[in-house]
Length: 262
Image 1 (cartoon, rainbow, N blue to C red):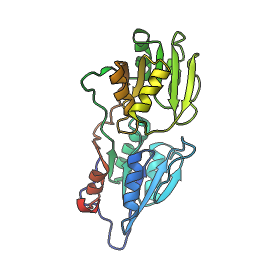
Image 2 (image 1 turned 45 degrees about the vertical axis):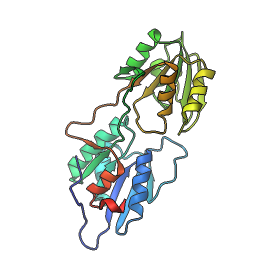
Image 3 (image 1 turned 180 degrees about the vertical axis):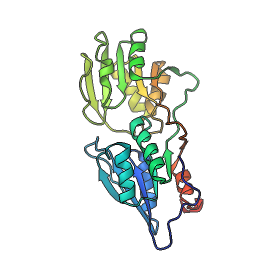
Image 4 (image 1 turned 90 degrees about the vertical axis):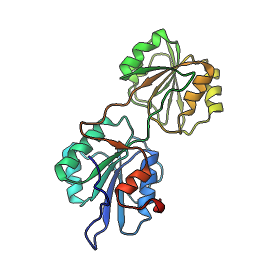
């Protein structure tokens, strides 16, 4: 699933790009495309965040109704390309986008920021799922800093011997662990701030998803400095035959815009 090099619409037609958004990269891409003559950009948001950041171009809120619904939208709105710039863990949306692109013949590409990589001094414990992450905790610590977003906390609800500090942009969905404290906050975070938070709450293990990016990476640096173990949930695999590009400039290049126009 990839964009054809130098994708251009027929003469006299605007290039219509659908961006499946919800990430910083999606906002950056939409902002860049919206300034270009002859380009129309529509960003689709799932609607899981009540106050999303400002978006350039057109915005639609809500799901499409699976791959078939997305395919119908691409046809109806005469989209020339679709860029899946959703969160690295939005596996269902990515699968639906791949199926819709194949069904309609609309060129598509997945934009994914690179994942985090452990460095010297890191004590990382990889897990393939939230359930596997929860199973690792009893041997690692009892005061847990849980930074997996507001969904999926049910995997940790049965750990009654542990205390959880749960950080999320919006109120997490129940069930929550029996002993938990919720902290509502939005990044970016600083290393000094994260270190102070870990010390204040006497955290002895961190749990996070491999979201990548700089906005929330400071907790990893802070944990390394304090010698804390970190349970890192791996990203779900991309659908068969689908590859990803790492940044906005690469997507713009695939759309046919020259590097100096970035």
